[in-house]
Length: 249
Image (cartoon, rainbow, N blue to C red; front, side):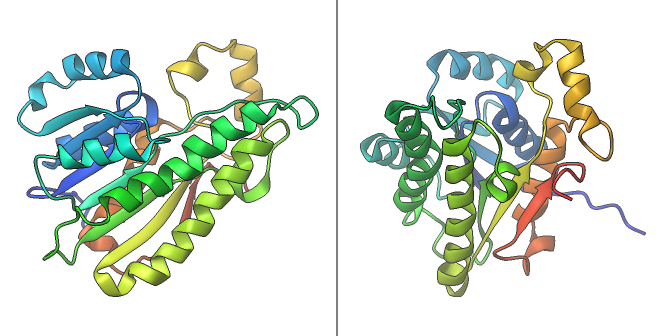
């Protein structure tokens, strides 16, 4: 048995929402595997923090402040890329959780515009920025298990993440002949800085709902993304990998 060791030397990735949380871990994992990474994020403060944390990869990483809800912002960032793109990871997303009865039009629009329209804006803008000679073109979209089974208080988020899955499957059919594979990762309950600030009893209650009895780590998601981005996954197209400890069962 041979353990897989991913190498992304001479590969260039664009990762949205990558200055913090799951996106940051994905970016770090690519950098540690020899890739070059463009980190796109809305938060200027998060970008400055990420620059410090990734100082050792200064020659491999490029930063841009991007509002994915605005196509002009995406176009400006794409024009500023220092290299052609091989891999796109659409990770940027927000939540505005409320029950349907209490959810406002603003709550709905904010989540749909960022999590779904934002994915369209980024992918459309970068579609002409991919390495034209590469047969290793990858798009990985971060969905969510709630896009598969819904969740109380997340009408907007579940709808957006279900839309991400539909878009993933459609692009997989349309772009396969052009050297792309397009797949999605659906995280379950993942421990991040935000969840770590929750009371222990809340975290324990969340973990108890998962068959493996624990929350996932950001590395669990990054590992799935790296696999789908690799040569080893060249025949995986149009799929959704649930990284959730079995919660969708």
